[in-house]
Amino acid sequence: MIDHVSITVSDIAIAARFYDAVMAALGVPAVGRDEHWLGYGLRADSASPERSYLSIRLGPVPEAATGRHWCFKAPDRAAVDGFWRAGLAAGGEDDGAPGLRSQYHPQYYAAFLRDPAGNRVEAAHHGQ
Image: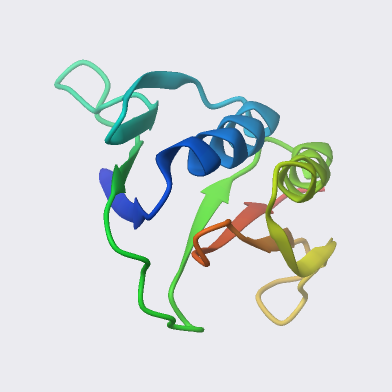
């Protein structure tokens, strides 16, 4: 459903450390950067419409919104665990340790973090 998402952070260098770590844990490539922008994933095109892309842009600190978050698909449960560990090591805050979230469905395995700018991010795997 999501083609691409853009979010803002107030410090691009701190964000790069965090997003480089969590995206690597999920197997998502960093595809570009400069002093105002970071890009991860691959843009969709006519040959690959299933692709997704994340753009992180320098801007004001995002307004707090507990219910707003971005969830990244993980290839397996180990990648969810790696996302969470890498995010903590790179300056993120724990917002829900890896584990089953059976309120969504019996195999929903996810972890939640706050990035250094306060954005809430999740990684989820839907299989065993």
